[in-house]
Amino acid sequence: MALFDWLSPTTRLYPNQQSIRMRIQNDPYYRLQSAQEIAIAAALGVKIDVNQASVDDWLRLPGVSIHQARLLVELTNSGVQFYCLEDIAAVLSVSVGRLRPLEPILDFCYYDPESLLMPQQINANAASVEQLTKVPAIDLFLARAIAQNRLEHGLYRNLADFQRRLDLNSQLVSELMYYLRF
Image 1 (spheres, rainbow, N blue to C red):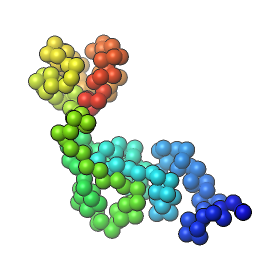
Image 2: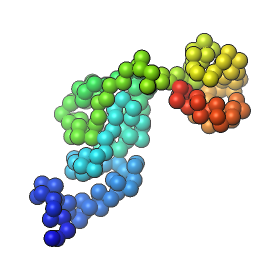
Image 3: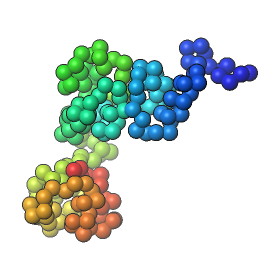
Image 4: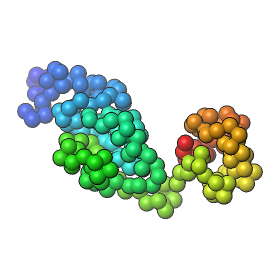
């Protein structure tokens, strides 16, 4: 049996497709270039959960600009959920037909904001002291320190910056990382 004989003619991979397959498998940031590469990625099980996708995830898709990726992430971080391809098309002001080739790797999962399995993240750079105290492991003293440090030294860049500036131990940061975003 020759290499690739087990594949049906419609799924047979030719040498250039094999190298694309290897790139997709080995590089989580590989930017897909065509509908053919999307099909290969889908066959490999690549899925992008549109309601939890990062900017890097969106940029893997052909034709998605950095501005569009940031817009989509900003909306999902603020609680907007996408239920179908039409939702994304409306946000990006593009036709559904333009996005249809991306559909094989897009996953539209629903997340219940009230679910105990899915902790609600709050923006540490915008949350009030009262909002911060609703996060497990943040008492009134720490909430006030977070707000005061933010006022005196500017916005937190990320979780590591947050930890360093507030001199928090790793155990506490491990607990907080599921509840805070920046």
